[in-house]
Length: 399
Ligand code: EPS
Image (cartoon, rainbow, N blue to C red; front, top):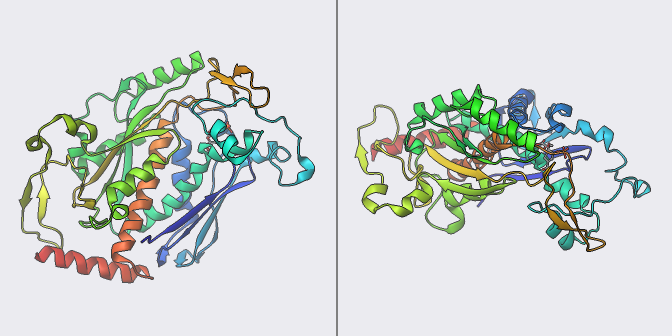
C-alpha cells in the first residue's frame, strides 16, 4: 500500500547516519540546501547539550539526483557525525578495537537500555543506546525535507510551534488552536521560528524554566502542535485500518523518541463534550478555482474524518516526556552484571529537546502526507502526478 519506502541507519557516535527514500517521482528539483536548512532547524532550540556544539549537520546526497533533479531512483543521504573523531575506536567496526572503552552496564530508567540489552543479548548497553538515541532523527529530518520539497509542488506546507515547556504553557493562544485557518496557523509558525524555544509567545518564561532545570541537573518535556495546510480532500481511506490517515500520522509522530501522546484536532477534550459540541458542521460555497466547495467553520476533527483528509488543515498535537538522562539526580537502577542496586549511568545529554522534537514531527508528518499523496495521485514523473492531481481537483469542483 505504501507509496514511499524509507530506511534509516546509523549509530549516534558512529561514522555517519544514512537515510534512503524510494518512491518519489523523477524530475523533482532537489538540492542539498533543501535538506541542510531543515537539518539546521532541528539542531537549534534552547536546552540542547554539548553535542550540538560539535555537530553542524550537512547532507551529502549520494544517489537518486542528477543535475538538480530527482531520477526516480532511491535517494540516499549521508550525514557525517563530527563526534566520530572522538569515538573511532569506541565505535569501531573492527574486532581489534573491542574493549577499547568501558562497557555501559547501568541501565537508565526511561531509555531503551534495559529491555534492549536483554532482548538483543548484550552486556554492554552502548550497543542499544547508540541506535536508540534521538540522533537517529537527523535522517528522518533529511528524508522529511525531501518529502517537504515534493509537497511544496502542490502548495502543501507543514509547520509546527511549541505550546508548552514543562508546566509553562504558551499564553494568548486561541482556545481551539486546531480550528485556526491556514493563515492563523502559519502566523503562529512564523512567530515560533523567531523564538529559541519555537513558541509563539512566552519565550522568556520558557527559557527561564529550562535554565532552572539546567541548574537543578534535571530535564523538561513539553507539547507542540504540528500541522499541514492545503492537503487535498481524500488522502487516506476508511476502507482498511492501515490506510487511515489519522492512524498513520499518530504512529509516525508517536515513533519519535520520548513522545508519549498524540492528539488529533480537539483530541482528548472531545471525550467530555456532547456530540453537538464536537462535530464540524458542513457548509458550501461554489468554488471559483478547481477545488472542493464544501468546508467547515471549525476544525475539531483536525482535518481528518473517517481516516481521510477532509480539506481542512491537518492539525495534531503531541506530548514529549522529559529526557530520562539526569545529570544531578541519577535514578535508581540495577547493574546488569553485578545485579546490585546502583545509580543510572549519566552520559552527556540535553536538558530540553522539545523545540527539536517539533521539527522532527514536521518531517514525520511530511513523510506520511507525501506517502498518502502518492497512494492517491501516484506516477513515475512529477508532471504525471500533477496531471492526476489537477484532474482530481477539477472533478472535485464539479461535484
Ligand atoms: C541523545 C544524547 C545526546 C543528544 C542526542 C540525543 O547526544 P550525546 O550523547 O552525543 O551527547 O545530543 O541528540 C543528538 C545527538 C541529536 O543530534 O539530536 C540521546 O541519548 O538520545
